[in-house]
Amino acid sequence: MTGNNERIPSVSSQRRAFLQTLGVGAAIGVAGCSGQSSGADLLSADDLTYLAPREADDFDALVEERKLAAIEQVLAVEEAGQLVSDAVSSTAYHRIFSEYDFVEILAPHEMTVSGSYDDETQEIEFSDIKQIRGLVDRENDQLVQLDIQTREAHVIERSNEELNTNTVNAALENDTISSVLEGKDWYVLAADYSIITAYSEEYPIGVVTPVVFNWNDRGDDRRAIGAAVTTTTLNDVATENEVLDLYQPAQESPDPLSGIVSEVDGNDPGDYQEGAIEVPGEMDDTDWEIRRPSQTIEQNNWTISWENTLHDAYRVEASYNGKPVFGDESKVPWMLSDYEPFGMAGPGAPSGRRNWHFWDTLGFTGPGVIEKHDLSDGFRIRGSYHTGSVDHWEWRFGQNWAPYRYLIDWNFHEDGTVDVTSRHPTTGFRTTNGYPKYTFHFAVEPAYDAATVSVDDGSGWSTVSSESRFDRSDIERLRVESADGPEQLVISQPGQQNYALQYDPETIEYDQTLEGVAGEMIEDKQYLEPDNYLQDRSLDGERVYLRMYSSRDTGEGTHATTEPFAFRFTMQAENY
Image (cartoon, rainbow, N blue to C red):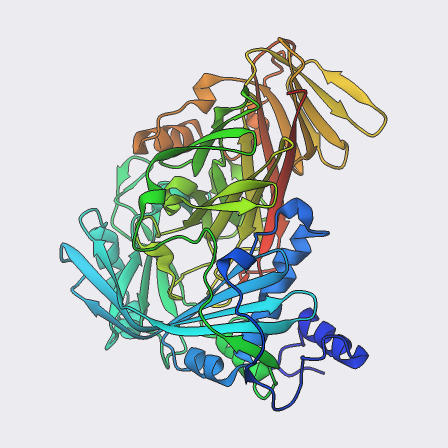
């Protein structure tokens, strides 16, 4: 029987023990051989190629299992483990290469806050930042290369110009909050996200704001404290700012990095090289040129134009062999994090008990496209999104309140295949709360002025004459064919729920402004319920739009969802 403070050995740990029993990977567990090996060349960026999702036997399993397996090997090195244990916060990132798992841990040892929330600006400085990088052989869980460096201090300057100080003041008047913050070097992480947050049927999106406080959490059981605070109007009636509820995430999570250090303490990491690890296609965090609003890439038979938007992540327009494939309304509009099993009393408001409910308009929550990666037969563009990270180098030092970070990749292959994947949550093991249900929304505008839609249920293709919903359990493939030529787009890995719709500019081409978001989300209130779009309109010879949804339930109750998971959609441009 496992005690309350013990963690059942991970699948990767058990697999490693099995490999050792068989004598596979002799370097694993070789006593006395830790440290830099001799006679082997250090791996460089030229030796590393990103693994495309379609090259993996099971991409979802790779995302879910390999991060922890690689972290365990890196933290088995005594120096790395000690640096994490001594840090004020830490976060781990995972990159998937063809033969190796790369993990990077960023662990600042000092954090200071200058100024107050009621000043024009407030600065959070992370210093003595330890960067721990490791490459782990995926076949045998062998640590092959380790690199430990100290980064320059990093300062985040927060503007409080648009901060809702009324809600902050209301929160600070709460006795519990004022007691928790006393003597701490704190800052306000969030205080004006009402447009993406609901709390109950009585307090839907637009009338409640999460006010969240963070601090240097070394030696403190609490990691943060948050309050649900009503805004100044409720149903167009002026109200006092009221604290509805508090959330106090504790230090302990299912798999914090410090817990992994304790678990692997005394393990021999085996024989490995020490030396700098350069990552191909890595974001240069001192040069944000890749984050400019738009860019065009021509490579591997594709011409891709992307554009950052206010709240639709980034839109992608694409041509293959010189012929249009995707129109510029192809995008990832939102992520939904919901405690309820997507039980909505009405669009935009959770049903039943009071619970936080987040609709992440992705343009609000991240810098957009940050990297381009070359694949063996193509390339991808990567967007990064995390609530609160629009201009702050992604809060990369473990000060993440909740696991709302998403990596969205469009993978383009020279044979016309497109894989769109999204990984959640990717910062890993210091997240502080989570919601069991995640819903990912992917929207595609096939670049045909007129088209027909067909589905394959396993017995052959059949034409769909009017707007319809198709569940993955009922179909194997979905196809959109151009009415003016042989070109077609075949979706072989659709969402769990899929909607073939007539293109309707009134519900698709909304303004990329705060007013546009409010108009669509709060006034129309139809965006979160896809069935609202079914109007029985014709699809025969019409301009078509596809909405695809997939969900993931990570368990019962509010908890820290620390292990990554992925969503994936696969399409093929044919007859081009």
